[in-house]
Each structure stands twice: as C-alpha cells, then as structure tokens.
Length: 148
Length: 148
Length: 148
Length: 148
Image (cartoon, rainbow over all chains, first blue to last red; front, side, top):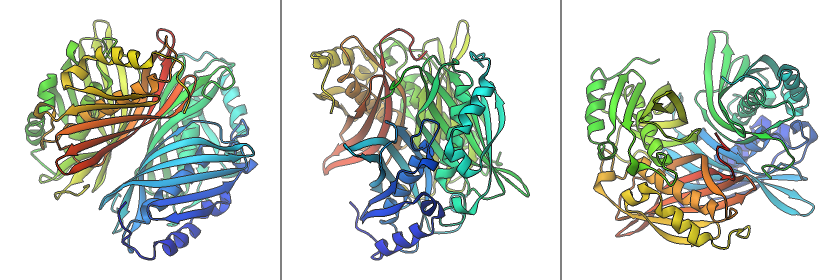
C-alpha cells in the first residue's frame, strides 16, 4: 500500500464526512479510518427500504461509494479533493439485519486515478453476511472542473 | 421492443413504487410509465447533498436504479418481481439544478435477465444537462430466494 | 456533440488502428469514422470461439473496447493518446453470425475523462442482432504515465 | 466458501478449457484449479498487443473473464454450463512483462447467479505487478436459452 501523502488524513476524512449531509440523514458514522481503508456503519432504518422491507439498493450503494471515496482520499495529497468517476456494484443478498457496514479498500492509488474494492455487509443476530460487492474508480481533483 | 406480458403493468408499477419508502423520503415521483421506459423526477433537496452541495452520487444512483428496475418490470409477467443483480454508473457532471430526472430504458428483456440503460439529467434554469449514465442488469424473480 | 479539436482525426484514427496488432490478428477493419463515432467490423472466425462455438466474450469485448477508445480519440487534441480506464459489458445474446459489428459512441467528452456507450451486433442471414452493450471510461493522456 | 456439487469439477474444467479455441490461440494454460479459484497463465505475445506494444485490454479481459467463468463453474452442478452475464474491469497498469496471470475467485455462489472477483497480474523480471481488477456476474445454465 502506498504511504499517505497527507499526514492529517484522518482529521480531513472526518471533516469531509461531516459535510456530507446525506450521511447525517442516513445516520451513518465512521467506524474505521486507516491508510487506504475506510469502514462506515449505519443502523437499519425502515424509511430507507424498498418495497420488500430491505434497505434500498441505492442506500447500500451510497454507503459503499462513500467508503470507497474516503478510502481513496486517505492516500491523496492534502490539498486534493476526491471525485467518483464511476462504480459498479453487485447486490448479492437482501440488506436485512440491524447494522449495515460499508468497507472501502484501495486496490491501487495512481497520481490521478484510484481503484477501490468496496463491500457491504449486514450485521444480524446470527453473524455478518455480505450483501454487496463494488469496484470503483475515484479521481484526484487538484483544480476546479477537472472532470467537467 | 418486446410487448408487455402484464396488461396492468402501469397500475402495478405505481403500486410497487408507492411501497418504496426511500422514494417517498426523497420526494420522488413517477413522471413517465411506458413499455420498457420509466422516468422518475425529484426536486433538488439540500439534505441529500455531498460535501460540495451537489446531490450525492448515491442519491442519483438510487433514482436511476429505480427507473431501470421499473422499466424492466413493465415487461415482466404479472406475477413476477424485479431484482437488481448489478449496475455500473458513470457520474459525468455535478448534480446541481432544480430537478433530477432519472430515465430507465430496456435494452433487451430476456426470460430471466433484463439489461437496461439508465440516464440522470438535471433540469436547470438554462436547460437540461446529463449528470450520469448507467448500464444495469435486472432479474425476473418468480420464486422466493431465486438469487439468494 | 463536442467539435473535434484535431482536424486530422480520421487520418490519426486509421494510423493508430493499423498499429493495433490484435486488430490485424482478428481480421478487424474500420467501417465508420465520424466525430465521436466509430464502427469496427470483423468476419466470424472459428479460431476465436469459446466452447459452444460462439465468438468468445473477450473477443467481442476487444472489439467494442477498441470502438469506444477510437470514438473518444476522435474528440481529443491532436497530440493526445487515449487510454481505457475501465469498462463494463453485458453479454446479451450468443455471438453467432457471419460478421461482428462493434459501435462506439461518445456520451460525454470531458477534458480528461470521456464516457462512451458501446454496442456489439452480429450480422446474420436473417438480419442484425445485438449481442453486447458496453459503458466505458476513457482518459486523455497528454504525458507519459498519467494513469500509472 | 460453498462446497463443490460436482466431484469431478477439475476434470470438467480441463475439458471445457480445452474446447475454448481462443485459449489455444492465445497460448493460455490452466495454472490452478481449486474450489472457487482458477488461475490461467499466458506468455506475452507481440501479436496480441495494442498500439503501444502492451497486451491489448481485450486480451487481458479475455483471460480474466475465462478465469472468473471457470472459478464459478467449479461450484456448479455437474450438468450445468456457465455463462458470462456481464463484467466490469479496471485497467490499472500497462500489461508488459513476460507472463500474464489471470486469477478468478468466487465471492458468492448462488443457485443461479455467481459473483466473482478477478485480477490480472504481469510477471516481470523484477516481480509481479497487478494490471487489472474485474468484478463479474456469471450464471448457471441448466437449460438451452436461459438467458436468451
């Protein structure tokens, strides 16, 4: 794993996370911050479900995308921002249980493009079960409108 | 385009949409229901943003995933349910403007697997701008736990 | 669609295509070169099949990836190279017939990132049938090792 | 990891691999066959390159797709066939070196849908380097035309 270029990455991840209104709306919290690794957790909430009572795919996706984005961010320069270029996610089991855990892990951090694996797991009374697998592309933004 | 197998698909799309709690939470509404084609709209909301004040990627994704899922559903048998197997989404511009429009279109409806293109556009005071492009795989579920 | 920045894009696409040894190996040829649009064709060949006698998924993918890459290239500056960041492809029907047609179309050309839709069709004695749908991310490379 | 349902999976993987003409064309061989895990290797060949002299993205993709497909196949019933529904691949470094190694690993094997992670590495004189990361969806086919 690459070494962090920003010695204050933990502080900066927390500050950026706190500015994501949707994380607050969903009741999500940072559970792990390490070099190239982020875990985000969220208690199950009935108002974030789809028609069968499971967490909506988009909610699971929001969580894993954020975990991957912040994982990439831990390895970026101090003055950089992170931008999701794209991701792909497989939904492999219904998101039912009491807590959703989203894990983002950097596969490779390049100067401009960072590739991350992401996973979502549900913690239930009988253990943890994987509910989604993601492969995401993040970009280091050093100037306004880079991707635009 | 394949012909609908379920003559009440419009009624069934509306009923299923109304059971998606997260659509209500986000303030989303069905704007178009046709064979293999669904549009969903949502007014911009500050509590669904990320750290730069744009709609969060996960929110855009939730909308386009729902549009693709319901587009696939319009071509399924009356007793079937739709399940998102996976999707990939490219975020191509910041989601800023007054209304998000998510469009789902069936590329090919198979007996078990349906492939959809999805798009997200923001309506602004100066016109519409595309913000995301999706390619999604939906599955026709005729029995409990097919994918599980 | 953006205007071409390189007035010799057609000549440069042909020159770059001719340097792709794998296109020669597969017997592929350029069938259409326009702004943001490339078609590549390839006669069916038994030595490029998988275990059921259809063209191998990887062969179809190679063709559509090339079509998308060159479509992006038509909109890049004259001194730029194109690099595939990633793509996702759905295989929607067996690739059987006498000619494979791969079509790449630019969805949005940004300064650094270009998003393309790609399609593969098989021409058969009874018409054309779509066999694959791609969504790809290409990058404009202006210096050595940008993505590395 | 799920237990194999087909006690002769190793023999059946070898037989199916030998029928993939494109694997022979590329000079690829099976390097590892285990429950949910397949490695395929291929010496570098100049006639499989793109315009910069690296292995073409489509060639790398063909190899990783095959590794994922056969990895899924090891966990399927004896009378089943495997079909690639879709995959997404990130190209993370140029494919240069003397040997390409493609690794397929099952993330979750369901009754109909199997999700796999895939990786491609190049073995060079100075060690191994990852060149691609894949996330793929495979389907268990028990009857003709299931996906068609």
